Image 1 (tube, one colour):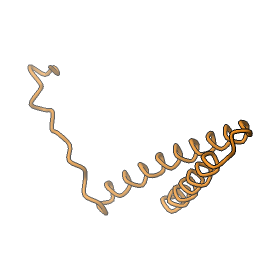
Image 2 (cartoon, one colour; image 1 turned 180 degrees about the vertical axis):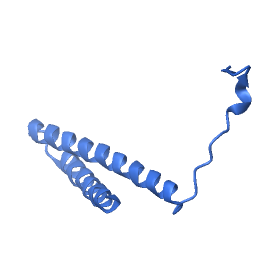
Image 3 (cartoon, helix red, strand yellow; image 1 turned 90 degrees about the horizontal axis):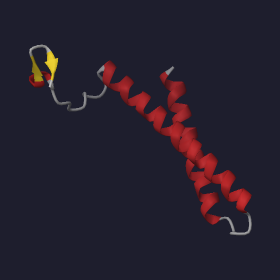
Image 4 (cartoon, rainbow, N blue to C red; image 1 turned 90 degrees about the vertical axis):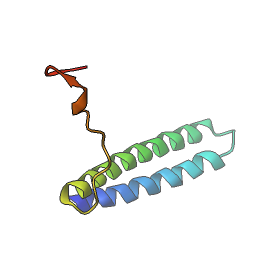
Length: 83
């Protein structure tokens, strides 16, 4: 499953860069082409970010990558309630 997400990640980022370039390089006359390219680029970026975070989460869970530094907030509890 992670290999599939990795392939989706690569394809999504490739789509982001390709359609982003098309959106920036299109002439101002073709507003519909620019709009379509921007929407597809944003979709590629969104899917790419989602897939990247899935891969990072999997790498941390399996021990391939060390866990990120997180603050322990247990010291903020007072009488069992969060402060």
